[in-house]
Length: 145
Image 1: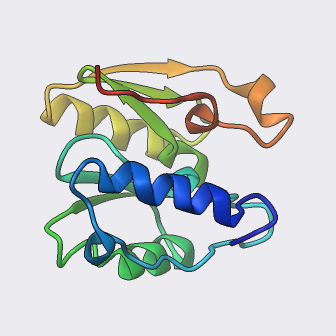
Image 2: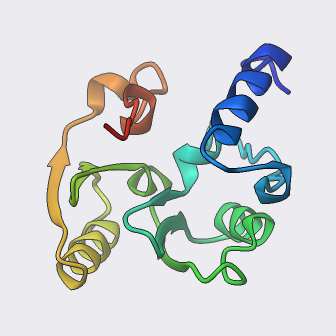
């Protein structure tokens, strides 16, 4: 629990996941990762781009989250990016929406990863979202319909 999450929210998510066949044994404990203002919550630091691939930051933040998730043990391939904000992407119907970043290394790695996986890619200007510590995942509710 945190200042932004209460027990009612936790119970709501637990019930929502249970309705999709996920029970407590599938839940992993991920420690809060806050390094200055680098990360607000988990999905700001690590996101899926497909069933096996995660985008995660290089360094201590990425290491601790991937270890807590047991990402390697679960068969995930982590693409490590030097710019933590570049890890925050949204994928819709095989198309990746990624934040524009001044980090050319992150941009090239995302482009290469999408090309290798046959995923579309669009870089989006999120500068207005950033003014309030927002990012793409903050503005997204993904539903399977």
